[in-house]
Figure 1 (cartoon, rainbow, N blue to C red):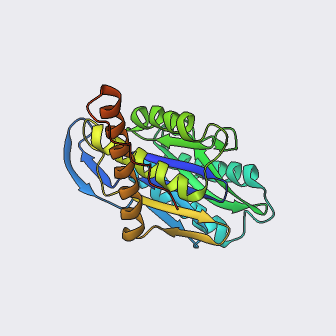
Figure 2 (cartoon, rainbow, N blue to C red):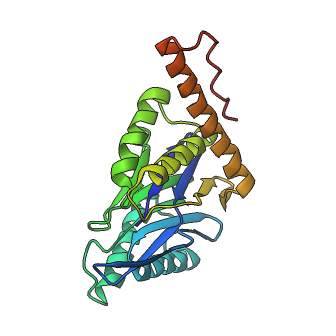
Length: 244
């Protein structure tokens, strides 16, 4: 069970996930444990996958080797994404892996820009996120995350992509919402990685705490607004925390 969120921003890219891994016999879940779901390769590429763990290991390995061996040199974003799909499909076919076993969100530099690509879990076909469609979610929590991301866009960012700091706030709130309301198998702690033109890195615990506090502040604002609408309070509604 997994929830992945990717957001393309004006000045960077964010990929986030939960931390829950559920082991099963195929039909019955046996245990759930904390695991790392985001990999950073060469301090330049972020990979977060959903599906079979073994296929994810192979996917990360081929992206890692492709970058090391400069197979993606001189390619633009969609060319590099297509080559990754080609390499993965070829690799997976060696062991007769069926389609639908693995999908991923990947952030990478190519063609003097940075890109966010969704590799569909149905067939690994790549889709670059753009200024028109700048977010994506994957995994079992997608049915929870997609409507929430749509709400965030319509309320706060209907006029375009968010800044990187705003995007981190969106990703944090979306992941926390999915963790809070899912029926099981999606749990914290939240993991977040960012890619800018300076490279890729994981957010620290202190940075995550700051954005979780921003989320709590917005929730408090909405609760105060409810009291004002119902006439229970005449006090001014507190301002929404400024995202810096």
